[in-house]
Length: 63
Image 1: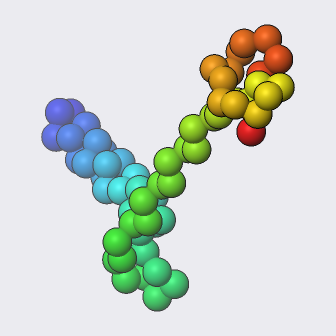
Image 2: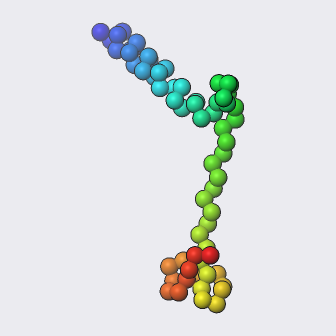
């Protein structure tokens, strides 16, 4: 019984691995370097005078 359970677990692990490598393959199926995710731009806000201010302060609007 334990042997069947181990075989089933290993087959499940092998079946799930292509899903993780799919984004790092080209159209021909060859492995390529995965593109790095772009960093989220920092939010900056300006006050009524046009100077940078902390977002959340009264009168500050996203720049």
